[in-house]
Image (cartoon, rainbow, N blue to C red; front, side, top):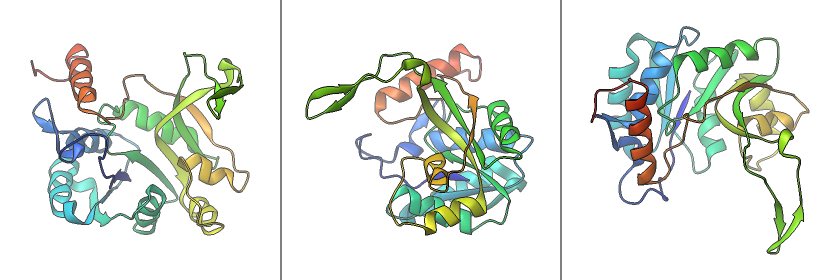
Length: 221
């Protein structure tokens, strides 16, 4: 399930998912990676209501026979994820941010494989900066860096477990592993790639294009 229902407020004008990245929309790169993953059987995309038709056209082109449908998202991310989960019946669902176009099929497959027999699995990378807890403008804690990882997507979840956890409270969560944690469910961690960046600002597009060129994944200049 690819979540493409964000508001793009930090990107500036336009929807970042339709922004050009080496000749293709950002979202097209994301969907193409999922279509190429061996362990992905079906693809559902969650989009904003006004963008449903445009997203649907991209998904049909990039996902081919794996594409199932495009569904309307909600106000919050958890609402959009829930809409997507209710549109499928798979036991495990790999949830991915549409704005992470540099994900690879190999990393998707590794995350799905790691989830087997658990409540789920998350792609993440070790934190390299020193992190501080701050309250009221003052440092309040010094977490051990070796214990800190930055979560990315995909995040693979047991579909029924996520829905049950969401039903326990209407509160939002920062990500899908946090939703599962409401019931004390643990998720496996798969080491990701710093290049699996999320497009948030226009500068991120330039960085993404540079990564694609350096990896030989596009001829764009």
